Structures are given as structure tokens and as C-alpha cells.
Length: 396
Ligand code: LMR
Image 1 (tube, rainbow, N blue to C red):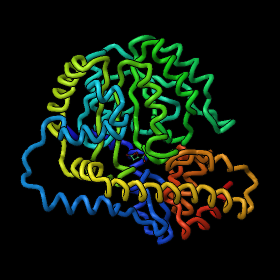
Image 2 (image 1 turned 60 degrees about the vertical axis):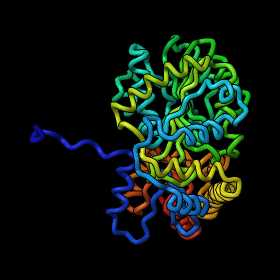
Image 3 (image 1 turned 45 degrees about the vertical axis):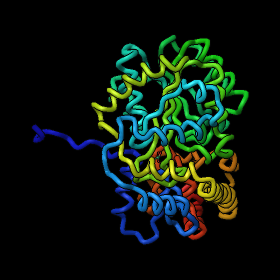
Image 4 (image 1 turned 135 degrees about the horizontal axis):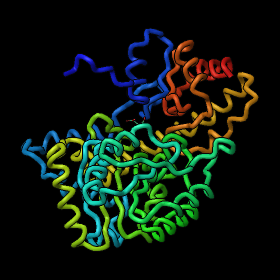
């Protein structure tokens, strides 16, 4: 069966991590995959997470299966983080949440579920988007279309083209939006623009899936819900795929959530019963540990405070690295204006480096960047920044 099989291409992001690991250059730099690194280049475990784990270790009494959607306490904690406890969607029981293995798991559950409910819908993603989006929804059976998003000339949002494209999407189609810290560009709509996007989506009767992987890495935990809240205010039905890999540093615990919102509690329960069938046939029920950590932190005011402070410190380090990166390029004699990097949100910078330049950086300097030119700013440290900016100055 497998004798004639050609190897599949390496994953554009995780394949880069494999290549980086195999590289023997002692000065290699990995700016590929979106993981946070501290000033020493480590990906630490948050102290709030460690404390929550100690609590869990002491109080856990069973390794019995979780229910298909995971623990109810986790679902409640997620909804509070997304909407706030007093939001009418929460108090009106219009949302139902399942703990999924990673944001990828949440997106795939959304894809499999929607394909059953709306088999003829097309799915529209931003141009560009996260490298895995097209694969996830393509494998779920959707025809994938793109809508304009980023203007490479101005290094900003192509808002007029985005709105014009949304107005051309037929009713019943699905649009995938990034709630904040757009991956890979780091360019987000502002509050007014989100309102307009929401109004067009509502008028067109398009169904939004909101990918929310970087809550807290833009303007703050509450501030980053501006897009989600704009959609929630006018669009009656949508799905949120929220990941806690980054903002709790729980990458290998695979902890995220699928949340469906409909017009009323009974429609939500009916829809969620189908979601549960999708999950049962996919991975049956989620792993427990990551969800337990998040629930423990968010239900403990002291741990919540500690976690927020740690997240805030991580964001500040990224902001600092953006500024240092731009200054260091200037100091190395680069005349091209890179100041746009300080305006981008989240972990990534869409550098404008071409695929050829990215490959030269990899082959000649052991600097690993995604082919699109996306740089993980969180991977820049005081000890690798000079080598990085010197290499970029050399190849420009
Ligand atoms: C990224 O974009 O680097 C992250 O979301 C990690 C991943 O799975 O690709």
C-alpha cells in the first residue's frame, strides 16, 4: 500500500522546528513557531501554572474519563474569559463550550460539525492566514476561498477591500476571522472597523468562526475581546475557537475550547448535541490536565492575579523586542523603514522578507523564519538580536 507513496511536504511551521533541531550550528536562532521565550531563550512554565498543578496533584482523586465536552467548570471559566460572566450570551445560556485538544482541535471540530450542517457552504479565510487553516478546513471537506486582508504596500489592513469582499460572500457561507493578533501579519482591525465587519457579516448572513489564539497578547485580556464583542453584539450565531497554549504557556497540554453561540438556549443545546457527536467520533473526550490548570487558576483570585502579571510581563518583553529589533536594524546601517514592526500586535512580525531572503537566512546563517517572512518576535533575545539584525542587514 505504501510502496509508491511520495513523502508529504514538511509542515511550514512545525517542520521548521524539526529542521532547527537538526541544525548543528551553535548560534542557530529559531524565529519560526509561535512560542514565547524569555530573555534567556527559554519557554518557562508560568509560576501560577506550577502552583495550580501542585493543588491538582494534592486534590485529584480519579483519572476517570471526562464527559465528551470536558469539565463543566472549564467551560464556565472559558466563557467568563471570552465574554465576561455578566454578558447576556453567558447569562442567557446562549453559549456552549467544549474543551478541545488545542486550537487546531477546536477548528477541526468546527469544520467537521459545520460540514454536516451546511454541506454546500464555502469557507473564506484571510489572505494571508495561519498556514494550517486551509489544511484543517480543506480536509474537513470545504472549498476554501480567500478574502483580501493585508496591504503589502502600506503594511496595514486593506479595510476597503476586506469589506467589499465580505459584501460578495453568499449567505450561508462561512468566514474565518482572527479575533486579535492576526497570524501571520500582526495587523488587526480597530474597534470601529470591527463594528463595520460585524454589520456586514450580519447583513450578508455569513457564519463567522472566530479563531482566538492570542487573547492578552494584543492590548490586554479584556481589550482583545473587542472584535469578538462586536460580532456578538449583532451576529446571532457564531463559533469561537480559543486556545490557551500561548496565554497560559500550556503548549503541550493541548488545551483550548470550541464555543458555539446561537440565538437561544434551546437552539444551543440542540446544536451542541451534534457537536458532541462530532467529538465522540473524533477523539471521544478531551485530556484533563490542561483544563484543570486553567480552571484552578481562574477560580482562585490570587492565582489569577499572578497569571495576569506574568502574561503582562511576557507581552512587555515582546513590545520591547519589537523596538530593539527596529533600532538594531538601523544601527546596522539598514535604511529600509522597518518601523511598522512596532505597530504590529501579538507575537509575530510580518517582516516583508521574501521567501528567497528567508531561505538565505536559513542556509547561510542558521536563522529560521517561516517562508512567508513571519518572524516570531518572542524568539528574539538580548543575546541573539545582534547576530539576527546583522544577518538581515547583510542579505537586504
Ligand atoms: C504558530 O502559528 O506558530 C503556532 O500557532 C503554532 C502552530 O501550531 O503552528
